[in-house]
Image 1: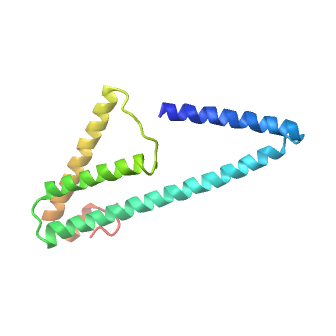
Image 2: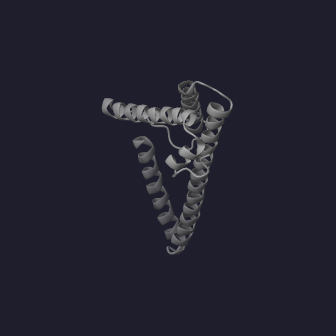
Length: 157
């Protein structure tokens, strides 16, 4: 990420130097600033809209996964919640890779140290254990019980 950040800083500096040179040649230094802030406002609103879209997509996909897991584990009679978790984690890994490498949603980053790797691995294991626990509870608890336990998730059952 530091490479990406330094690239942005150099590009921004080059752009500002270019704008100053253009302002000197045309004799109107004040006009360039208004255009730049207009672009910034447009960029900020696009970023905010994109963030709202991503949060909405995240909530929708979580609701869909919970409902599908509940259907598979309770109504359909699927008896393998850990296998279901493995499928969930595999799909997350593949779709994350596709969104980073092909769609460039966020810049690709490399792990910089062993300490950072251990922190990421620990977070991954805790998240996986959480999903396994959730899937096991969906297969054993009644729908109204899971609704009480999962209040942050709208439309849980």
